[in-house]
Length: 478
Ligand code: HEM
Image (cartoon, rainbow, N blue to C red; front, side):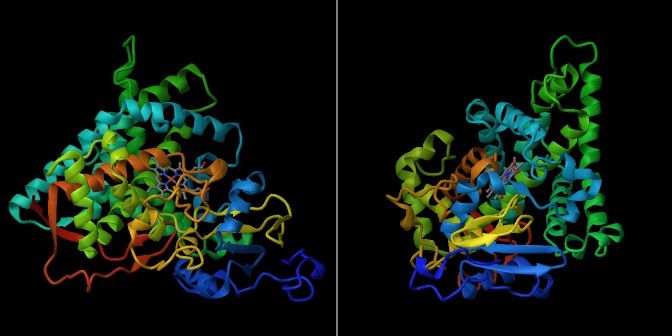
């Protein structure tokens, strides 16, 4: 991989073509390759490459290069490298995040946009999200009455899971039976962790046959648990619909069954199952971990928490739940969410892209077939962009044009271009009303023995970034 800039083009460049620094191979980075990559970015600059087997991986840690990948050359980088783990249950041929840009991919995105994730649908389903936040507040209130510690990540997971399952199936999967919600969370976490594990089969295709680390096997077991739930929901609904003139619930499941039965799009039952799998896994873990990090930062920074509460009290009144219509009037809360996404992007390396052709990126030629990882985590902490990058300072976003919608490449937690996260709007709505309501309805005390100074801020890196220790705090009514 060499730079295509000639010596004449810049007197500052060293003579001859520049090589992208090669840093051994991904497996040398131990069992936390993502964390190590992020750390290496600090010392090895904006672009580096690793080679193992037949696969060259290039890691991009500069906003300018991210723009080249996600915007300028979006058509070349808009497909994925298929990691072996997602071959379990043929998910690489069925799941929206992994299949190439194709008629099937467009259909899946269109169906999601029209019936679940687009802003018109989201406006029409506001009441449902508010109801889920109301339930969350009621559960936290009960814990506060009993003086119980709340696992914030689990509470946020339950609310998000209930919202997604209500939209899809008109049921709360995390109902009073919280054991089921805990199991669901464990399964989702196990899937996400397995997806993030380094795997020799990704570099040596012959090893795929033996699944050397058992990753594909683990993914198959956990995917089956979720697929079984979805199959059950689908069959139950088919039974209910028998003999009915119109759909029984008019939810996402009914819409999808209509599409499959009337063949209005090229979608079949198997596509629907894998779509549910993606939406549940991608939807619950990302939102939960962002919310947990946001709360952690606030509980560790009491001044910022006080300022956020003062804004909420002024705009919506004390101890009240935040509504989506309030968000526009809460610039400080918005800044807190952006700052959380800057420091703790849920997908620190986005999802792996594949170069479809040789292409020049800021003077370097990246060969066809290269795996490109855009290090959103390192870009969010780049000291040439951000002052005091390791400090949580929401004020940096007040009066700033920068947003997270894929146009400002210094802040790309949802990526950009064609593959931009389809649930960006939903996630932002959920994060604002959930975090805003949790801090406006309760004061929070860290569990015994933990202080803001002693809080473990370690990140657990994988395909997704999680908090190593769950945040646990006691709610006190305001
Ligand atoms: C804080 C919340 C979230 C963050 C930070 C986030 C971030 C991302 C990122 C970085 C990607 C990969 C883009 C790329 O590299 O090309 C992505 C893709 C995706 N996300 Fe999200 N996401 C979030 C919430 C959600 C939710 C709530 C859902 C579903 C309900 C969802 C569904 C998806 C799907 C299906 C894709 C694959 C899109 C494609 O490849 O076409 N995400 N998300």
